[in-house]
Image 1 (tube, helix red, strand yellow):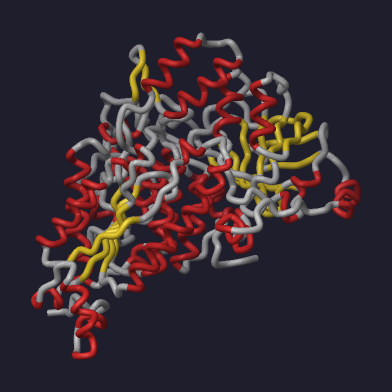
Image 2: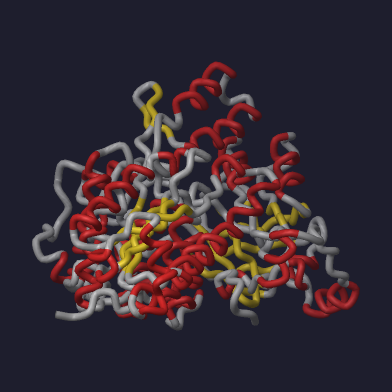
Length: 561
């Protein structure tokens, strides 16, 4: 029989470890427990946000399942920031920072306590990449457990999500809806626990985790209130014990091919632009070479065939009922777009996991379209380069009728400035909004621009106004929007050289983002450029700005240009 406590035995065996054992006895260990594998449960439960408010019972189910399977569960808490609640405020700067804090905290505890395995339970947007980064760094037998999606709100027979409320702000400011409707949308949008319901960042990253093979099949689209979520958490915990027995560690699963599978699924379901940033960061932690150009290569060969919000009709619970990510993956596998031989946390390959999944989606649903009748023949997350983005940028092209615009730059130094102008109706058709100094260093923290993009869409300008930023977008954003512009303004990137009225071209079809001025003029401006003073001189945002890399490198804090 293989040794199952191969890592934790350094704190439980031998006379010199009597003090260690004495402390462990105080939290429930007995003599017979010291020979069992010790499994960490990183629990993201919090009542800060509905995304995480229902996670506690999943972590408890995992703990009980681990004990029943012959392991010793050790639970600890991890933090979260609610993207939806902090959106549009200074607090949103801490969202991406929280990804690093979550990853660091899980790594700290698991290394510090010599854990044999890990169950990571998370909900809100940065919980997922933060946990996956830690899993990749630690290289333990590990499973990620998604806290689950929220069920849609209902109003007059229509599904609502949190993005419905952000768009209602724009609709109301433009006089397109009355106050009564505005209030009804606000009060009905979020009916309970679970992460935001469309194919926004949380559901995008849960889908990516399932496709990556580090989460169980069907786990990425389950609704948090459903008992299926509890059963799934218990099954994941049981499986960690199996992974320990097999010594199947995370990096054997998180291979280059597995990341390609994850990107392909993100493209097929219409996932968030944030997936680019997060998957690059996770890959770095796993020691896997991955860059933004890989996303463009995969985009061009992958059709978008799921009709999901924000640019489509349906929510994650609809996708679950329609067959979930396994159905999507089976169609991609049959098309030759997935690596079927990748091992997963089930102990089986992708192809083996999908063996009994139908080749075609059910005819009685319209969430997953037939592969040969997609929404678009090429997916939606395009990598744009040009004299405004030498390191690249990420455009989201779903939900719009045009992929190109040339117009005058409307330059703003913060999200707040831009939103004020939009709500005051100072943005008109043909404008290209520029929001800068919101990058990893300049923000710091790369705030998400959901409020401005939703306001633009809400005013009916989503097809005729462009928006570029060195910040990020929420998974709920859509329209002619380009984020992650790199290098960012704060470090001298070309976006920092723009002046009001410059002609800007966004052309997703040509993968182009450029300012239509001469190279000589850009060099003249660069010679006169003075970087803005750091916005913080103490605390976590100061430390983050000092450590963080470019968005093109995943905005990680342990690797630099």
